[in-house]
Length: 178
Image (cartoon, rainbow, N blue to C red; front, side, top):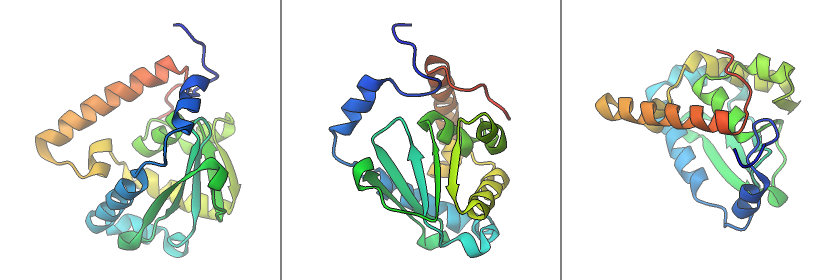
């Protein structure tokens, strides 16, 4: 390996390269994916109860962007901001991007990465706990989150899982906990 990343972090050169790019339309795509999920699995969003209108700031500490997510079912939004333009939120969830992705796909247990300090929670911890419980209940695969079904779902899940596993090893990310 030609570089030794800090535990789970993207290398500084990649971080800087991402910083010069304009904010991509990833927020729009994520909004569509969350809304599609809300149509297919409304029970997940009902679990959030009073927290569905909470402004969650998702802060991948190793890229120059942050996300604001409001998981309001079919009216959910995910917006992407340059770090310097990051809005405030009721709760902030911070960690390396690979760890945050691992929380979504079930690779990591939220409690485990919190107690190893690979994940930092600030603000309304009750809201974060409600979101964590919802994500655990969801048991989402990457393809399901993106709306794939049938054979394409198997292909997308296989390729995504293989890529993320390789990236975790390359970045010396925490060991899977689930």
